[in-house]
Image 1: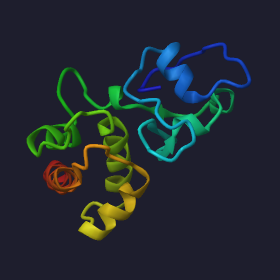
Image 2 (image 1 turned 135 degrees about the horizontal axis):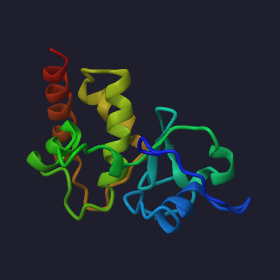
Image 3 (image 1 turned 135 degrees about the vertical axis):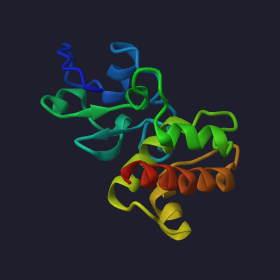
Image 4 (image 1 turned 45 degrees about the vertical axis):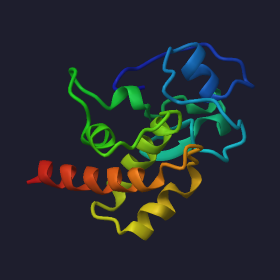
Length: 151
């Protein structure tokens, strides 16, 4: 997980969300709905955005799991995290980790998404503060930042 190989004993019924938060100390993935409807617990599993409350931890053996805690490197924020700060993507911040991880997935598949593509990609992530305009701006900004890094 996050560039680290972990071996954690788990019960067969534990969700990945539970193990991340309670056994690994990765509290970025928020527990909210518990039914995969809000996106607050989204992580990347083998590069794909997945609500961690909907997968069993025991089924993740050998898979690459990335959480929001793994984005920054050596104290430097990832461009998506920078964009979130600059564009006020977080209001209360509860949805931000899931939104950020979903954004990472989107931008790994589509480096220059349209607003409609951003909205569709983030459709499974809810923001109770209704901060969507700033979130969309943050995704656009992150795409530009990441494009500059590719040059």
